[in-house]
Image (cartoon, rainbow, N blue to C red; front, side, top):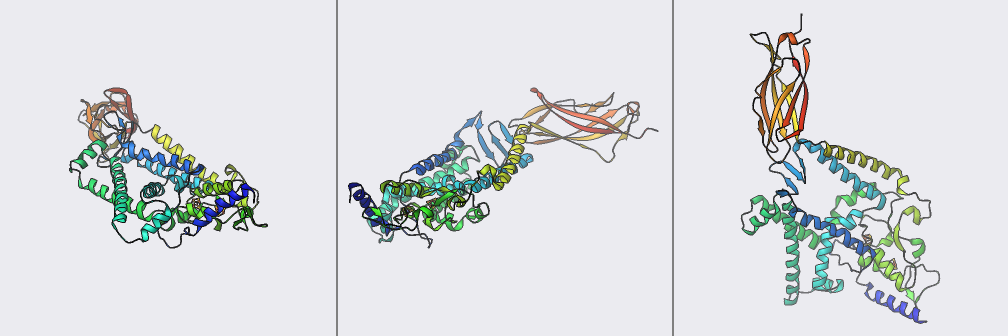
Length: 473
Ligand code: SF4
Ligand code: SF4
């Protein structure tokens, strides 16, 4: 054998030696996946790091309050300068629709990218298993430790691991709660044991949930529990690009002998490295399957094997079923499914944009007294009664003037003083409008109420209504 063939055989023999410890996930037991460096592992680190926003976001200040605060008791969501009240809940619905459709678009184009790169379950599990590996060693050591009797050594390793898991789980619980209340005050209340019972319950639930789901259940959640894994099938089609084993190139698989694949064999040397690194413990060579979270770690593993045996990368690669089977393929912008999803997403995005730019700082509603619609006063003038409702959508109290524009001689009664409206509150105020009878030429005369902010004359809302009077003879 040449030097190159020798070294290829040596590498292959090393992989075959550990092959026995990798098995396909069929029994809901703990998966101990092998960690290897690679292009997709690096991408995964970048995407996982976006979760730092979850941990650090609540500490960002905006003026005298938290930049993003989901204030449920006050029923106000603050996002920098924008305040969203329950009246604007349609905006929240559109936002949820946008993200649901975004998930569908991405899934139809590139499978469960969200699961493999962003999902909290896979991200937290990845961090927990990294800690486990640092403390307990590689997968084969961890598997042995799992089956070993509990002695001082095992107890020490387990206690150390659980300690770090617990810290991360508690930080997760505190960070979640911090989006709903002032983050600095929350820390103070936890540290002085004066937090509300709700804050303690949230912390307890999130700590326990994170500890169990990321520490013990791991990707079994993706495999057996996650509803998204079940519904993804309806978003895929033959043109969806997924991590795929190229069976044309790989089969028939066979062991590397004397540094070479046997005559007639494909490029797969049956080393099981793709199974070894798979966090859900599946064998991608069995074809596309619901256990695949599209993390692409098997691409890194197989490319590393190909490097060692001198074959080109891409035996496992991002490809559609059509491409692998040699059928013509279309780019995603020419496929009906992603285009339909994208259209819905654009409509939702347009609605959100419209909502955000038209939220306004006040809302005005006017309810006309119906019974009676009008009264005739002793001086002959006609009077209508109105219930004015002013909603302050700002995060501070405002002072407003109420005026009215309409028929000549109109007199507004009950609005001599400016009105104070508390932040996020609706203020109701009764006023009367009186108009000389001779100035009313029809039974229904247009009338406009105007509310203007005393401290900001440009902050004005108007309401188009009507003034009612008896029919002229
Ligand atoms: S597909 Fe690649 S990593 Fe998997 S067994 Fe074959 S050669 Fe090894
Ligand atoms: S088969 Fe590959 S892409 Fe799918 S979950 Fe396993 S390692 Fe990730």
